[in-house]
Length: 163
Image (cartoon, rainbow, N blue to C red; front, top):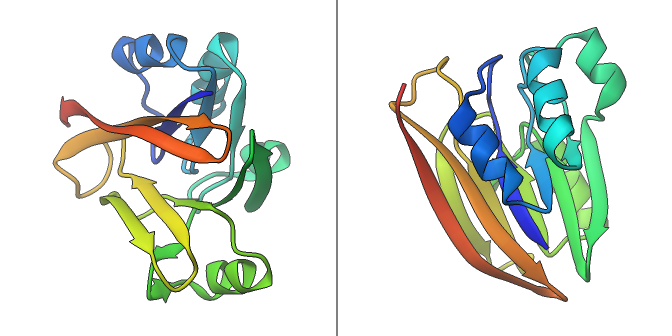
């Protein structure tokens, strides 16, 4: 399963992002879509999973949950927009991880791209940074990777250019 991992579009999407989306099997968005247009454009291309972010209004919160747990092939996935990172998880993320640790924990919000292994909870944490043009980040980023059975493989960082 080829995954395109996005976050923090803040109402921005361009043809380059959409081109990457066509090469994925699924698109996962970690929140702060910003508007319905971003969702509609992505959904036209491939199946979309996501969570709402702190800037997302009622319309988006009706479509996406705050916490999303699902299984992709044999990998348990947990997604929360504001989740922190290993040793600095938010209270909600910490509670969810303690209840049942996933193999893959994904969050957004910080606009800081990170890929870290959490030894304590035996999980991979990913934050794809921000693909949009709003925020303090300088480089727009996203990630792609593959899930093969219970393995997460071929993780790539995609730099979309300066905002």
